Length: 318
Image (cartoon, rainbow, N blue to C red; front, side):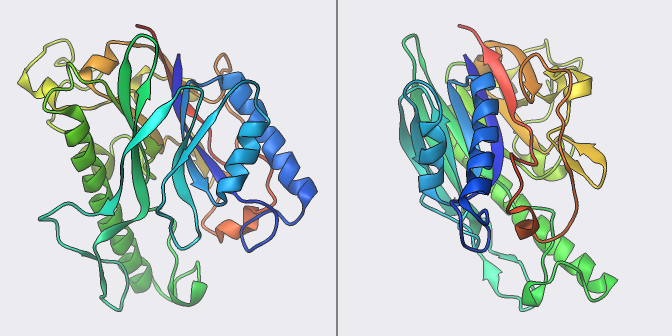
């Protein structure tokens, strides 16, 4: 089976500030997304940037067979949320935003008013197959795209840029801590025997400090000398499958002409034993054609066909 994650980018029905301007643009977007999902044929796909729940239902309706849609109840100021599109039955076990105690609220603007919760919900489900079950969590951490007071996307000066860059980092780190806290509960004390996968747009790359928070105890990363040396930390670790992705495919977005892998799949030790392949885009393709995006208003791409992200996936066998 294939398990993956995909930022669908501004999935809204027509109208509104972020949705496509008309029905034709909306149908073109759905057709593009559906074609990729058919090629992926995922058993479970974690999704991000679902603006209208009905839009995900419309997308599922374009796919063959029976599909289930499961969405977080917690949206950000744009109304986007995370969720799952799956061919397997799932049931929700968590849908959370509060930062775990004793983590204090973080500053997110010059006003100094603290924020004590994630901008978007972190959703976890139990997935049931004929042979086994596993837990899956999906998240969408704070973007590195900076916005400023008054709806600006450009700072007045470099001091303002630096401050708001720090605010974004504070929040992304706190949100990563929330995801890790939820993962700890899903692991139930031993990921060697409890299968867990964390999916999402982490808005940063493999080596970023915020991404590293999710891994748990250091050591044993794929490709390191410790990988084949089991130790007691394996019970609590998550492994990022990025090193298993062929080098030419190891990106999920292009920012200002630079390829970045900011969408990730992390798995527990037991689940890692099931992974037979990992990739981005459509299985079998050597690379994914993506637009290069900048730091402008997300609404500028409201009429874009498809998504500015590539799916990231693993194929598992049990």
